Image (cartoon, rainbow, N blue to C red; front, side, top):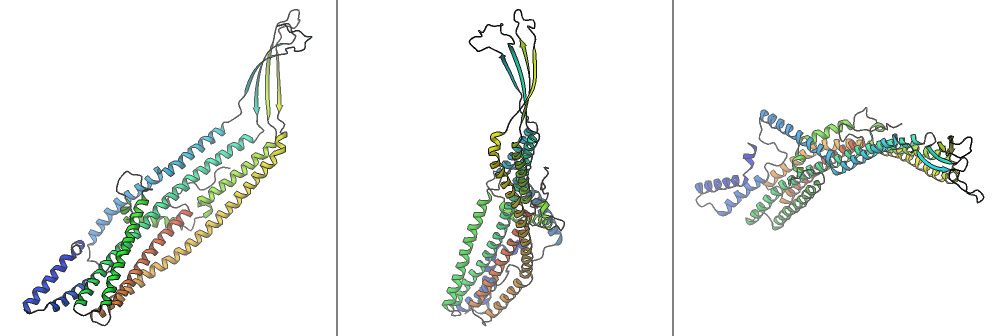
Amino acid sequence: MVASESAHPDDREESLSLLINHTARRHHPQFGRTAFAGILIIIITLQCFTALPGQALPPVSEAEQRSEQAHHLNAGKAHFEQVMQLIWRSHPRIRSLGQNLQSANQKALYQDYRYPDPAFGVAYSNIPYKKDLRFQRDRTPMSGIEFRLSQPIPFPGKLGLDADISHIQSHIARLQLEQGKNQLIAEWLRTLVDYHWLQAQFQWTQTMQQKIKLMADSARNYYAIGRLSLDQVQFASITSDQYKDKLVLLEGQLQSRQSSYRYFDQTDSPQSPLDQLSRDLELQKYLDTIKKAANDPRLDLKESSLTFALQQALARQAEKKTRRAQLNYLPDSELFASYRKREFVDNDPVAGEDFISFGITMKIPLWTALSNHKQLESKYLVERSQQSMAADVLQRESSQFKALQDTAASLARRRSNYRTDLLNRARLALESLQTSYLSGKTDLYDLLKAYDFLYRLQMEYYELEKEYQQNIIAQALITNRVIPQPGVSKLEVE
């Protein structure tokens, strides 16, 4: 019903013109062209002043509204969630972070079971080498084949620290994956919000351009009958052309956003879903959900911030590396066992007896002691740097979150002021000027200025809405609530 009344303005204008022409010629056979043009101008001018955005539309039954909204919500929710899950599950950036996590997990498992390999040796021992001891096979006492087995043993704690470092690296990879998901979805939501309000600005500018164009046409007709001066006609024409230029600018920005959205699109469809997603009621519902989650009074930024958790993990890893470097001063050892089968020697009363031996060797970290202090000093500096960075991250994000909350409160008050006061007063002022213009009490300059004032107020309101929703996304990103089910945020490796 709404569409049928507004879909054919040209037909309505033509009908009105025919009606005027018929009535005038019926009652006044000598009805002049000038008088007819004057009445037609009034009709066109009245059309310029009707159906402004923000005025009431013909009512729709409650049953139709509920049916349409339920259908849109059910279909929109499925589509919105499907696209979002497709992005954070199969986007190349997320796949890359997932592969890094798998690699870190495998390395952590490797470090859990890693131990130095044993060594096995075979030797023929006690071979004489002096010139006065002529070598004869099987004639040298104590000679024989020796088998040796040895096992290196690192100093206690070294392998455990290596495993801890790998497990923390695995945890870091998990945090980076969760952080990557949140950042990607936040970028996607920002794109939808930006496109939605840019589209609203385009439609509003298009509506106003059509109104100003009708007024410019009306002004030319008024000029033809001597009702307006040439400067007013030119001003109306220039104003109409300015709105055309704004439409070109906004249309180019919309096309640019469509191209940018291809970064998130994981389908091969030639048609981007950006237009549908940006209009979807589920977008606003989702933003309301993450806003509520980000402003939960029970939320602790220390526990929820992924950036802080990641920096804590890096600091913990640096501490483990420092302790590992300290153990370089302590010696590793090696256990060994050997078995020697003695060869048979004639006239030897103990010929053929076998020998076994056991022992331990210990590495002397001499050269390490001369240089390890430099490595240790480097590890200390890295550890302190990471700890300072963790404190910086917490302080920075706490202040940013508080600033975002303050900005959101200010934006909320301004949005309410625009909705309930400024826009309504601007429309009332425009209606008053329309009446004054039709009665000849004001000129076209004032009327066009009133239109421009309402236009700018409405555009500012759209910018406020966009900034407010971008603020919600920023709060959710800091608190790890962009995806309502938050991922890992605490350091679990002790």
